Image (cartoon, rainbow, N blue to C red; front, top):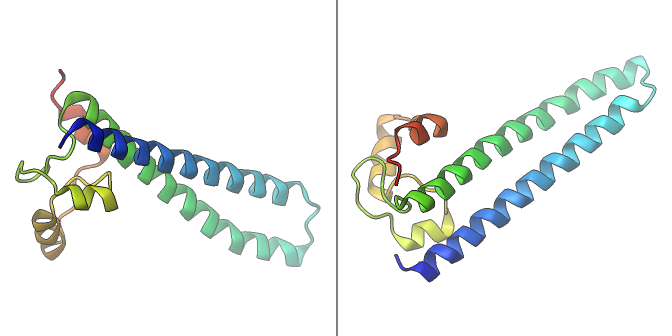
Length: 131
């Protein structure tokens, strides 16, 4: 993968990271607004049902940011675009669609069939080689 491709993908990752953080910020502001209102008993139940989707979006956003941060770290140490399972290159086409991909298509299929999950991103960073 050449420098221009990596810079393009890095830009995609940073843009996506920014949009997730903005979405989380907006959700937090909306949640804060709900908390400030005087809520009657009926509205309390409605608030409780609204909280679950907000919480899930926040968790999903955090997980995606972790994946993006791992991809950016791998760019820094020169391991970006390498499959964590087989060590082969991840296709540029796959990275354009999913720039934080950690597995090549073949390994991703194998992991899915066998119901294997990758280690958390914090664990993957801990074992990464430093330059």
